[in-house]
Amino acid sequence: FFIEFISGIIAASTGLIADSLDMFADAAVYGIALYAVGKAAKYQVKAAHFAGWIQLLLAVIVIIDVIRRFMFGSEPESTLMIVIGLLALIANVTCLYLISGHREDGAHMKASWIFSANDVVVNMGVIFAGVLVAWTGSAYPDLIIGILVSLFVLNGARKILALK
Image (tube, rainbow, N blue to C red):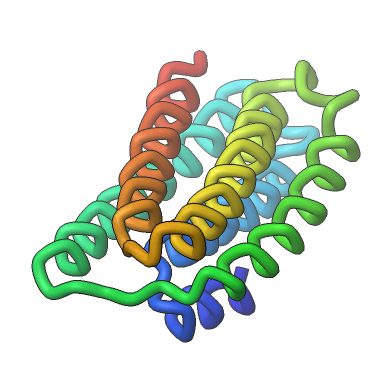
């Protein structure tokens, strides 16, 4: 997530920054899920809810960044968006595969699976936005994917916070 975040800053890409913050939230969720393994169900739910609140906060940060870039402009670097998006996609598909067999092993693992599934969709969106930025020469596809990622993350947070 650190490499993607720095790449997002260099590429002036809200999509990459949004995806990197989402990956940071995932890393936190995996750590929290590992902590909750073997704990009582109520601790697993608390761990999942904490992760959901992290996602909610990061989504709000990205929405603020999209508004800022819309108001003051940005020129995202499409090639970097596509390359980093592809690398992130490979990483997230691997994570999704590794945890798919354990997604029903408690709320904490369900939250981890939801995060990873969201990331695969987000990565494809960032790659598509990078292609559109290259094709149109406009920053709007990047801003749109930034908003869509935020909405997607907010929906994931809602699902996680609803886990009992």
